[in-house]
Image (cartoon, rainbow, N blue to C red; front, side, top):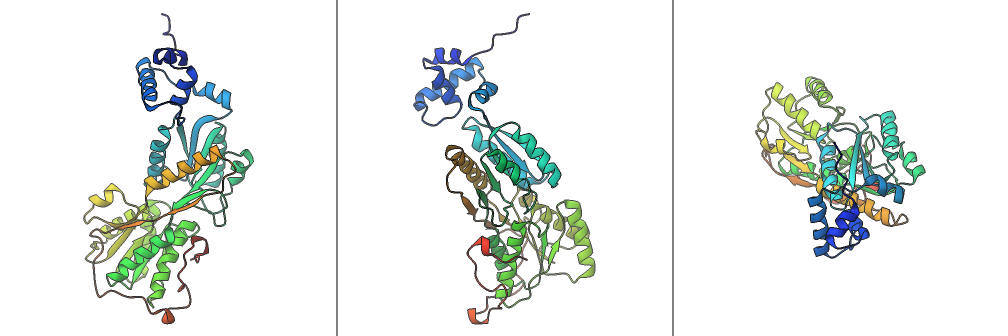
Length: 365
């Protein structure tokens, strides 16, 4: 039985009454390639005929694939998965595909997976490094491919970076608890070896110290749900229960909920909880969780816009974007007293008491 003949770009061009070059430009998402009416006609005919862009031929012509590769520390983490899904929506309208890999929070794996991704000759790379050292950046610099670092941003890194304003996010979470009268809190962090976690901690510490209160303890519980639960169990066994907990990641939030349920500690009657990130399950729990929401859609959109600009102009000035987080108030926090206010400026504690506007100059915890 004869194989059906492959539909070519010329077949689409003939039916649409345009040149093959116009078809190529339209289907590859090049802006201004045709009028909206012509572009719509070309796309409709391509769908009708079942035409698919020949990515191999395109790569042979340009030396690069219309592919953006994405490397994240873990596919188990809902935040990283949400970034990937948002990126996919961004690139598909411009004729690009994405290829995704996970480094499993391991530097050797990160290097291996990044080498594999670069073998595709991608047009650009979006990377969330394992840690602050970002040792694999040399691979990207050597190849010269446009890339943007998202979320976990190495201090002093001069390339393109997109992330949340983590310092302000930490401040907002702490200010909310002080507004509700909480002076005794526990901060549940993954690891302070990562800059964005340190920045959140620094914002929290600054608010407490500016109110004349001791800095809350910071409990490092690791990167998985299991280690969160184990760390919390040890801490609560050895320490007096605080009136509130701030969990700095979604896994941390889930781990706190699990540990409180095991101990029959009610939220918010016995302890208030502020989580981080904002997912459907946080709205579905009883009670729904008050959380600091990162704008994942905007983070992905800014990452793609940055890569796109870098592709068009490799010599462009690096972009450093920090997006605000939003405190979503729900029922997991409870008012237990009068609001705790900041001390007047002259009475503020010297350590950590200076308002800082630049993320790069924020104190480490």
